[in-house]
Length: 87
Image (tube, rainbow, N blue to C red; front, side):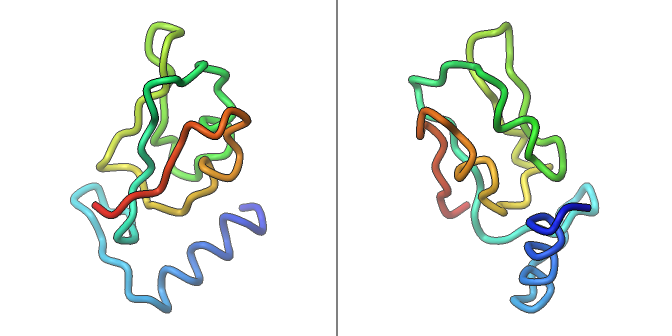
């Protein structure tokens, strides 16, 4: 586990994140993909829970049940299309 992923999980435990139905801890935030996604896949590579897929080579899609709301994808998106929003 990389430093960013490990530090997120530590912050999550301290802030009492809740466990979702798939057994993952998640914050009150979720990643949301904007309509101008260029489907580069950068977000997929950094997601600690593989919650993001590029569908049909057109747009990234976030699985809300897997997304833990860490924001690594938001920081990584070269086009600035991803956002962190409250669930």
